[in-house]
Image (tube, rainbow, N blue to C red):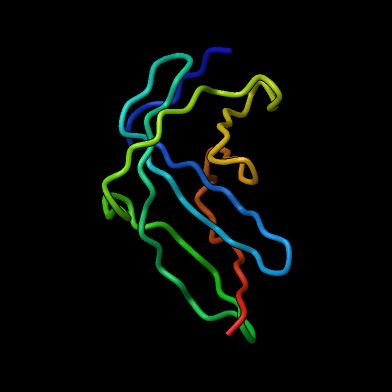
Length: 104
């Protein structure tokens, strides 16, 4: 599965059971089949009780780890996706704020 993802593109994942976790990843490098990603810091705007809208801070990274991930064939062929971990899949970010929730 080949894609035209380039450095600077942002992927987003939203996952969780009793709360909604949102993480953003910036593409550091990409080939037609693989992306190298770094997790981004986020900006949070209170939404309702124990929830917020989350936006990425491009260029502001959380930690030093670079993830190397292959694009997934199970995704919509027109929408690049990668598996971040066993419970989180990421898709190209559309530029809008994402809803997140938490406990305490």
